[in-house]
Length: 270
Image (cartoon, rainbow, N blue to C red):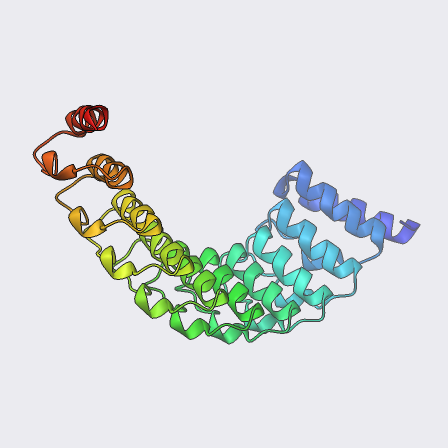
């Protein structure tokens, strides 16, 4: 810094030193050394992290007035600063109600030239925003799942199904958890009749046992009921695949270990 600036800075420190901690003073000194107008951020209400982001913006000639506001935390300031550096319309996400991860998803969408209005909703988490953004980038019909009632996992399964040209209407329902959706999606990929297990009363492990049975071409109608747990289903499925008479243990009241013993016995007799 030149002599005049040094005198101004020393006078400023003399008058205000007790208002700032050492980290804040460090950011002010860096601003002085850079020749920028450090008075814009040399306010006690700014943390050193906020000061740093304003300083970096000033050093790059950005309009920091857009985010030089103590209500933004330093992470939010980073996202707005990055948007300004990338010449993006930061007004589309410089909303104090967005956390920095939401801001990031909108910024990345703007950078990729997609219609961020389809997900710039404070009711969407950043993970939900990500799934909508990914769908927009692959040109699928995101309106099917761009709804706050779907969590990000459900959105992901619907998006993947759309990208795979599947009939997602068969599972795009909030009644299914994302792992159940995944099993239904796999079934569609395998060209199975998922109506045998498209039942939200079946847990994901039960669905998997039915899907595996369909893939093997066995009669899953013998066990596709919530009355059997997935371990029991497994014993029935294996028995059907081995072409044995499972009627001997086709009973929800029989524990899976007993089913297994009976299956081994029948297999041995055969």
